[in-house]
Image 1: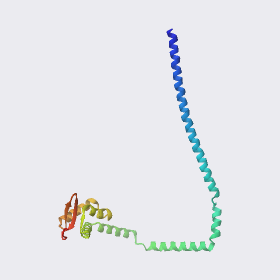
Image 2 (image 1 turned 180 degrees about the vertical axis):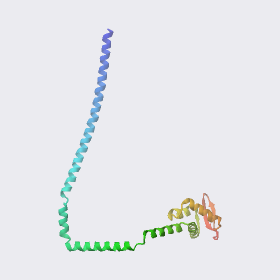
Image 3 (image 1 turned 180 degrees about the horizontal axis):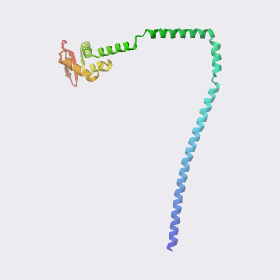
Image 4 (image 1 turned 120 degrees about the horizontal axis):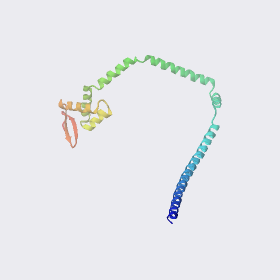
Length: 190
């Protein structure tokens, strides 16, 4: 009797395993069917788009047709006049390029302007001029004008030069909250 129950148990277990396997196959087939349907729809959409593009191209004028239209609407004399004007413009450009200063001299001149523009004394005079112009101005506002808008020095250079100007006793400052405000010592604090 033990042998019969073992075989019955094995058959039941085999039946259960087969059932699970077929359920997995059924699930996989369902997923494959969904993917095939999705790709089929995409294929149909692409076919429709391709047909529309081909239709547009069929109605687009060909190169020979365009040339005929241009020849019909633009007489040869007009084309020759345009060509003549284009050649004249090319000659003028060549003449202007010949008059340009030598690139080396231009580079040297630009470097000298940049060096003098960003020199320590120049930056100090810009800072002093800005303070004088506004009467009194906060440090962040002054930094925004000199560093961010004019771009003549870095933030660290700006604060170092501002400290030097303060030490030379050209400007004075006071602190309101967290902001330091600068003014010329010759001005009366309002």
